[in-house]
Image 1 (tube, rainbow, N blue to C red):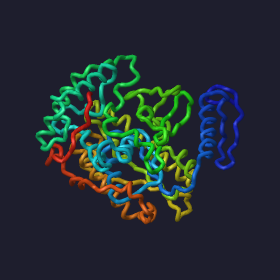
Image 2: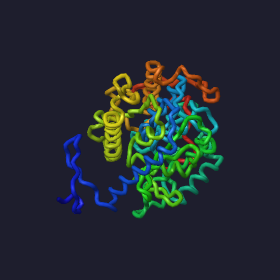
Image 3: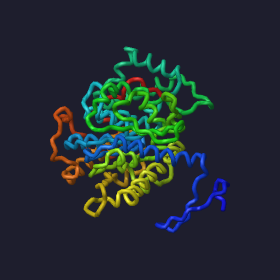
Image 4: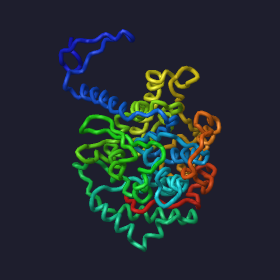
Length: 430
């Protein structure tokens, strides 16, 4: 018999499923990937521990950052202290803002995620987030550095005090982002620079001191295997390797390895999480957005492009969770015989806002932050025992809330940013 690759192979019969399984030819890429997964399992077993009981899993999806930021702020205010944090893609950004913020409290850093959005009156005409997605190349890097050092421009990057000031600030940033030079050409590996402002908001020197176990996942194209960067080794270069989403950023060279974002291989890396932490009793997954609610006609070409990336990722993440629960965890609840309580944090997004849920507009960001915040606070109140809220929490990890998030506001009634918001970090350029 012949397998799909055209190589002769003898099928193996799977007694459990009744299916015939064709082994991958030795030396093929699929064979190497399978071998590498087994090798990673052996590596995980050597560092495994069983003391950790609770884990939080944050997946990718940049447009959902405000939702994840709100959820983490809610958990922070509720006093939830996870033993393990596992992240990929945009989830790594949010987790780093909570656990290693630079020059501000975790709550402030999470709230400032909302300010990465664009004023509605600008976004309605130009639906691109020029604050997050920056032009690539050495000339663009030099331009951003000069812009950040310009005292004339400094006031426009400071927290605006009124909606009018916020709009004017965003207009100035749009103008300077438009004039930013770029070396993008057909040979470029990706469209954008890799969050050039990240070192202004994350203190990478503090990452190694994060209290819980902390991981960022990446996929090594060189070694053909998933890699979990741990807090002891994470630098800004590891962050950029873990945020290398194809086409947007392109692969990132770190040492001898070429990396892509871990979500391109496994949206949620359950395998390494449970192999390294064998005593977990509760896993909380941010089920960021249900894919069925995202399936709709695009409003424009840019919206179609965003939908083409996000919908498959979210659906794959949902399938990963279902597969892990059924095949490896024995279900979702320990009371029903599962190894670990597996919770998907659900977000109640009103139907009238579903068309805008992937927008980078200010009103949508505020709304998503509020929804995420309320969802995690309610979840924490309902599942205190599973989250270990009765356990002592180290004093250094407690945070006094700066202020509660604003109430969600309908798009038609309030178009601009909350005056209490901080401005976007320095150095952005579309």
